[in-house]
Length: 408
Image 1: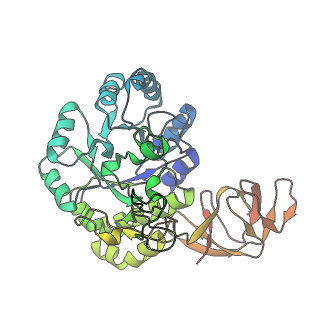
Image 2: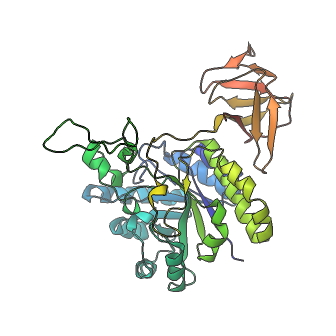
């Protein structure tokens, strides 16, 4: 069978490293300009250079987003930006705007260009159009079914690649092109400043009765009428492959290292198992599902892949995530005496049982034996986020192992 790329989001340099170690074939990230995640940490030029170096040393590709819908004042800056990016050597740029595409082709002629889902890529004519201009890959619109993607595959050049989302949050607007944020909060989602008003609670009022809330509510708090469940296709890897998709893309450049590690590891194993032996994939489905459910989610849907979503694809009572596990930290260094060095993310204490998540798929239950600060002073608990700690867990660990706590 053909190779399937697992493409993982990286919101920071540490998360990029996590994605690489836990099985990504490629990562995508945003620089400090021209990406659609202005509220993410994003990467400085030096972090991009270091991230690409880390990934390339391990055979992993790096794609950089430049997928805003540009205005006039963006064009000159785009030239400067691509001139800088050229020095770092990314494997591809992700672009939606034709003007930005033209500048990228001129400034970085040897770099592949992928067309963002923001460009509304819903038919094979669009794919052919971008291929004729020199694009290597097009990201399919989220509104396409697997049947439609298969038809696109059958009508485009064999060497042209299709990238489609396999997991993550679903935008309620067509191919992510949303006006709600601009209208309600004055922040343009199409230029990276989305405030996610689709997750807010709404009531209905009638113009002759201002201030009177109408009974369209699911409960007394209102109804979250735009609040889609998250996409999850872990049960449908065979169908994704049969549709002719080349790259399975995970959404989430604002997610934690734990989220990225869990999703990457589960999909890595699912893809590899299926390509090696479809029977093994079926036998391990329950493990994939259980692992995916350990990361934060808004419940799951298959989106548009099997037809237009019905009312069951929405969540009406709350916009909050289900959080089954808490991220405690990632092993940064293993000391000679076996203790680990971590930057603590959430509170834990001596005597507590926690789980160690390893890149190879192993989960290990351990008990916290000892915690000390950087001065070597013993601590009964670790209540301060981002504090550097040395922890004895009574087990042999390795860098990039992740500490998490079961909250169920």
